[in-house]
Image (cartoon, rainbow, N blue to C red; front, side, top):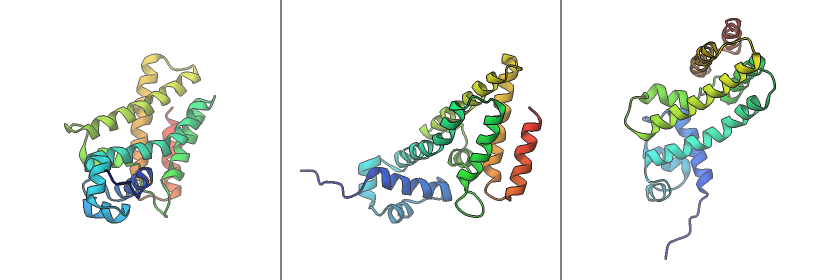
Length: 187
């Protein structure tokens, strides 16, 4: 007879997410995960398969948090002003200390790259494509961009978001404001 789990998988995955977000994928060891999650390796492997499986579950937790902001953007009837607000909301999202943690997706993409044969880069690519599509949809609301220009501007915004994600880790609120304001001067 299988033993009943004495932990909530969602709660321990959230703890793992915060550890990966803070330290990065490669710098987060199984020992660190055991300590942070309060469960042993056997339980981690039993629930998540391996470190990659746990990381993918952590990404799901992260996306569900971030998609509160994305959903706000999607529901907005504004175009560019709503995207700009999303950028500012994102800065707030990353902050639980004086300086932010960046974006778990961006941090991971910077760490492992997207060319790897693993499942993780594929999940990161799907996520970034979803965000780019939201930006493109909002740009269509503006009505003054042709389809090719929408694609280019959506790429510009996505890449700007990557820059902002990294910048939240070390730059001041004022510097981040300057960055965001200059991004939107070019639209």
